[in-house]
Image (cartoon, one colour):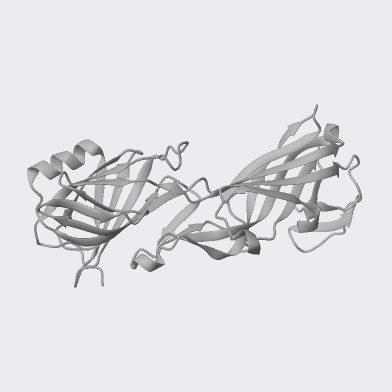
Length: 317
């Protein structure tokens, strides 16, 4: 059971928390004395990261311990207050609309999940996630000690915890070369199949199943290419089988869909955080094509027009 107790804070910690824009949400509180801890984030492992805020979760490893959550504005860190004791810490950015943080009752079950539809398609491109873990954090009258990701033991009499968040997401670059019929194209949107649904923040392992991630495509009329980017959580390279579904709308107003399997794709994995997917050769339908037969469903698909599916949207319902 999560306790919700209250205790009085001294005037100094209250002023420090107000100045740093840090808000506390206590899952459990202790009556024992504590210390003000200065948590600092260094972005050496994710130099382009600029999150609007970070969430800290501290799990007490002492008998009868509890859980503390702190939401800190900005990317630099801030000051928090913890009772004296031993903890394990998880940190993740909290500024992503397409990601849900769940399972906070236990450290081993904390998970980042992409918001999705019932058909395992992400509602939106979730954005980039960044996080880190700290083991064996000790808060005492002598200061703070902790074990970082590199397993080095740090001790700081000034009560400073230095965190180095890393990128948890993968950016997927989709490029379609040698596109014919670009003059007929009004818009294009792709779905990249293969990224994981989420990630366990404690173990940094992906969570199945895979999802389809939306990817808005831009056109290069001169170069004859379509390209776009999306992001998601990576599955291990040896288990990932990518696929792509491309939806286009022609200037005539007709919508088409075409599916590409793994054999149609060239996949280059430059790192676990950067994957390029290339498709060579594509012809945009130049004619509206046949009208699919009436169906009871809101959306009908008829296979025709050089391998494209003609999509009919029934606006009468």
